[in-house]
Image 1 (cartoon, helix red, strand yellow):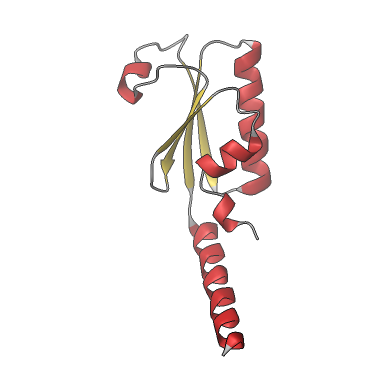
Image 2 (cartoon, rainbow, N blue to C red):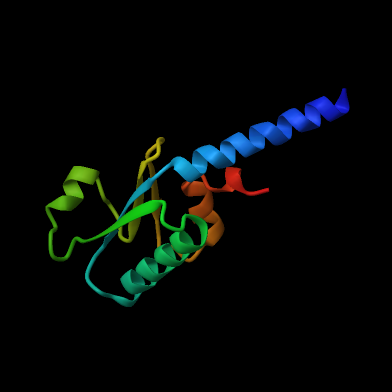
Length: 114
């Protein structure tokens, strides 16, 4: 019986991985000008996306210094802010994006790691 449970768990895990591979992540990174903090956030998010999502994501970088009106629509209160629009649930992560663990949890990528 233990083998059946382990096999089922392994099958479920494979299904989760397959679903994750089909999902397209839609991310928006809000920054304010090309400050050191903004550049670091963009670099960190791109690095995490490339290493964990490969070509399964779309990242839009929005400079609120250039378009301050866009902050109101997404209720941005601090920058940098990363918003995961898709797949649900919507998530917001604030900071310079240097805490890789926080980003992975925020993007729900931890559940796909063994």
